[in-house]
View 1 (cartoon, rainbow over the protein chains, first blue to last red):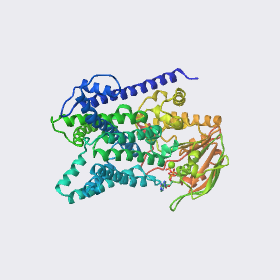
View 2 (cartoon, protein in one colour; view 1 turned 30 degrees about the horizontal axis):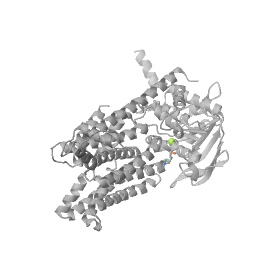
View 3 (cartoon, rainbow over the protein chains, first blue to last red; view 1 turned 180 degrees about the vertical axis):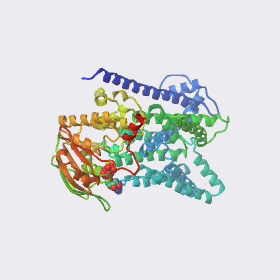
View 4 (cartoon, rainbow over the protein chains, first blue to last red; view 1 turned 120 degrees about the vertical axis):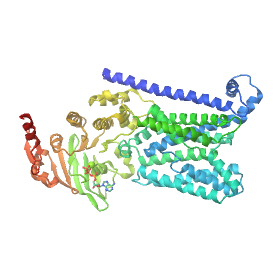
Length: 351
Length: 272
Ligand SMILES: Nc1ncnc2c1ncn2[C@@H]1O[C@H](COP(=O)(O)OP(=O)(O)OP(=O)(O)O)[C@@H](O)[C@H]1O
Ligand SMILES: [Mg+2]
């Protein structure tokens, strides 16, 4: 037996859910638009219609396209555009889950030293001359290994009983400083040319994307996102505080460890392929939170969409600010990210 | 029935429970009282399997708490911790729904949402269902968390100072609801209170804890007296009895020199 007021409230809840789904769809459309633009822009501009036609052709719709356009799109720009989308999404989700785990809206894999560790790994590989292997392979592997190593230190801490999230953040910041100093050390002892090369890697770049890189990144992302979505409610519960999450039946230590491993894996994968891209990890989840709140069923996918959208549009900008020149994407995201971040802080203050 | 045998609990050299033994019957409300920092909250955590005692065991219906299967043990518990702050962008309804964490899926079914809404309706807070919990007052948060605890439909309900932020009205709503449901659903209800008068009113069984020992246990009318209050809190108090024989405790105000009691002052304002 339900009273009318309960029935009314139920329909309100359904309307609420629908609103959030609309927000997800709206962001998805924005993402599709920036994705198409990302493919269209570059040294030889393609028409948006042409890009759409090529994409439609790829998914089996019979349309006529110029062979040159098809080569440019599938051979060069599509992997880069897909990489931008995946990497942005991963950074957004990584930030979202770090913020959830650590109960702190300013946390991200970057703040915990994971990106710095990856940077150090890459720099070290460049310094030692890739150990005789091709740099294409050695640098990502070095970055991945170091990133997982620093995450491993955090796992060790997170597994201990009675470690609070505040202590984890402190440890992460300590790691950030450690790896940054090590990175500076490598740069200090390197030759100017090598130092330049390291610097360029640190800026982050999508141009090395190949179909294989994209394939690896996308599969890792897909698996990790599925695993995270399965824990959506537990992660929501975790944000109520550790004691309360436990009281609701969450195995806090295990959930924290599992999520940390997933996030580290995703972060290490994308960072090793594209270098360090800052700010999306902090900004994207905060935008998502403002739009749909922290019910992870919506918060998690929206963080992905917002992150993907931000990086995809940053990629468009990096190609169009100065026609003909390509700005490092890491720099562009920071430059558009910082004013946005300030705006967010100021907007939040008035609440 | 929840049973504690020879339970010893300590943080380093701070002894919180010294071979405690007691039994908590189902269908009754058990109230724990004791001074700040005696280890009441820690005792609840030990019952919940969150703090591991130095020695002793906890049993539910004869089954011993096994730390390797602590999740299974906790399934029958609903535990409302002392801290009532909620700093998360969720609606009240979502927070209440989390009480049924195990049953939640990506698509929520109607009956589940209705159950949460009914839990809110029962405590008179249905109108808050769509409010962001960060905009709630402390007392409202506490009531919402109580609703969340009810959602678990537990066998053992443990509440750590559940009325610490509530006004008279909501104190009564919460405690009456607890009282009725404990009898109806045959829960083992354990609650920590600091208000001795509420404890006297709502406890079927009062447990008085101090210095790691159970100083007194039994019906409030039988054990609550000035000597006990002095022994536990070091405060001299009057204990009177109302028409139903329920004790109520009042501590005298210690005067300060040259001070006039406010009641007297107020009268003098009225008479000019
Ligand atoms: N993690 C901990 N490490 C060390 N000491 C602790 C820890 N948790 C609690 N204590 C100490 O144990 C004692 C009992 O704490 P507890 O929270 O159980 O008291 P309490 O009886 O619930 O007090 P209150 O009435 O103030 O809530 C306190 O002296 C506290 O300082
Ligand atoms: Mg306490």
